[in-house]
Amino acid sequence: MSAIAPPLALLAELSHRCPLRCPYCSNPLELERAGAELDQATWQRVLSEAAALGALQVHFSGGEPLVRRDLAALVRHAASVGLYSNLITSGVLLDAARLAELVEAGLEHVQLSFQDTEAASADRIAGLAGAHQKKLAVAALVRAAGLPLTVNAVMHRQNLERLPEMIELALKLGAGRLEVAHVQYYGWALVNRRALLPTEAQLERATAVVAEARTRLKGVLTIDYVVPDYYARRPKACMGGWGRQFLNISPAGKVLPCHAAESLPGFDFPSVRTASLAEIWERSTLFNRFRGTEWMPEPCRSCDRREIDWGGCRCQAFALTGDVARTDPACALAPDRAMLDRLREADAAAPAGDFTYRQIGAARAPAET
Ligand code: SF4
Ligand code: SF4
Image 1: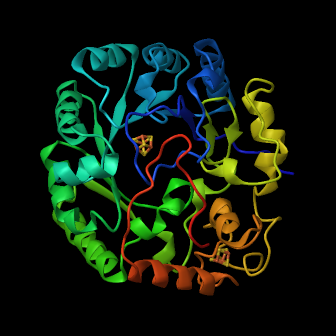
Image 2: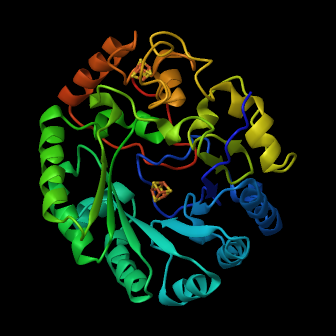
């Protein structure tokens, strides 16, 4: 086998604790409790190992990474080993003093999530009163501290009509980048698919809004936009391909190719508690299982996009077909695509219903998959 290229980035999920309860949260349904979290010394070793392996960036995430009192110490350590630090946060626990501490430690970028542009709707989606107002204040603090800001807007059936306002909000807050992140349906979002899946008409309007804004705001605001899988003709290259660019570390130390991989059956998930990152990245069964193209079934095996999208998302393939090695049903060429089309049409035509909020013990199986 040819040498395995190093990862580009490490997603460090410091904790699953979070004051918000978003119904599309990418955390697993079985949330880790605080007592299971890695300690500061272990995270610092992991950051050193990631840098030695060749990673360039660390994204501090969660849950809410600010629940960790040692976050500044971890940012400082990341800087000392040459990793670029990005904070992915809901913002509600950030204040000027904490931000100053992080900037002094070497934090280089903040990615702040927004649930909507209208406070009442945003707070309802977040499951926390007052969250939206707090986020507006935090965005101003981040810009005043001189840090680049990315607005992460998770869009779905219940807020997609306000995408033009979201673009204006990102501009007003001084963001350099806006991620228009359509919900993708695994984990909590799969549980809430009926409440979140947009209609085709909504999606078409949103895509036109982004196209117009990208032209108008060229050089001012970069807008990232990916069509939701359920409406795509071809899947996205999930995490840039399995085991190609990203390492995800769970709060308890499991090392995963993506944040949803804990949902997959039949794996012993490797842990930083018992192995080095290099051993796991290069030699673990988990990381090698879907790396490259050898594992692929038809039609991927003989498809000219196989090294572009890498067969799509393994977690989605498993969630919808029960077989982790199937072609992602988000691909129009997949044998299971008709099933995904039926689910989409049924959900988009049904009333949205209530959210199942993200919280320990709240998840139930989706109504139909
Ligand atoms: S998606 Fe919402 S609930 Fe999940 S970690 Fe982010 S802010 Fe917290
Ligand atoms: S057949 Fe496989 S490789 Fe080809 S576009 Fe679909 S998912 Fe991608």
